[in-house]
Image (cartoon, rainbow, N blue to C red; front, side):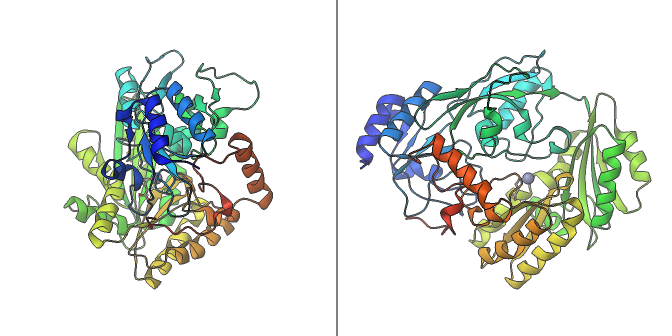
Length: 472
Ligand code: 2HG
Ligand code: ZN
């Protein structure tokens, strides 16, 4: 049986006493997730600085049945990066933040190697200093890390052009539960010697191995960026716009959608009126085109042919561009502020459906929200049919999921697009994966982590419903 004091002493001898945090006030920030919905207790937060230290920590934990919750930016939204609530074995949080080195940029291969604890913003800064760019961007860039982004297969705004995190990982280095180091950082685009660890680990949410470093793809830096906020009179018009800009504009970098409820919330949060008014039944699009030559004229030419665009605001840089971007970038922050003010954590769904089904799903979510007198804030990534359905003041989150997720699945959609499953969505995994599929996934889990020490409960379909927001 694990003794927390013994564990802390043993782990201190590996990472140094200063990096084993056992006081409640030091642990607190690592024990509650960003939304305040998921929390639990750990016996210690352990902060290794090298892969060798991760190896030694995991060996100890594996030998002593100490469960491990890997964490870095702690920006996850599905309860996967904090300890579980009551009823679980003693756990440590393994904070990966100190694995934060970045190699030189290799401009010929367009790659860089980063530690798992490097933030997305630091990855971006390193690329930019080398005259190039990263293929990934999302609002939590200042805290979210490379390791977490791989573990959740994060997406964000540039997926329409470059794909999700999974597609950016040329190689990984990761440590299995027993301390075995797997993977490669060689960065060879052509290497086919058995399993592809990046594919296996992207989306595995810390349940199969702890990612310590990654070899990542980079993309050209475009000198010209044009940002347009467009108010569309219908979701149908937004869909037609998507088809047109995708086929006409090779420079399309992102196309994000904000429903009127989201525009209103962020407008109040920012204390400034929206640059365009979105009519009821309509939707706002935030479109960015980026290229080596100015894409503005091309974007205007396409919009001249679109009937459903009732108003547009355009910027090519400076504060005006930042103002337009804020109406997309700061929605999650605005939701969090509203949730804090009301004292009830937000209930978040992150679904993807065929683009033609978006409107129906938003309408369904609106009906469920009305039933619970909750406030729905819908927005997302149009090209992937990825809807973020945020419910403020929901009284029965399970009812929301039980109503919306089966419909999403029946439309050929998914219950998790880019935030992962964590402990929040395990109950509904069966909607999109067969029994055999889930059993095969569990077999892989058992083979790599036979003692079940890595992130227990996460991605585990046998978990049933979790009692969230409950400290043991
Ligand atoms: C985004 O697209 C993130 O900004 C967060 O995926 C979404 O807060 C959310 O629901
Ligand atoms: Zn998103």
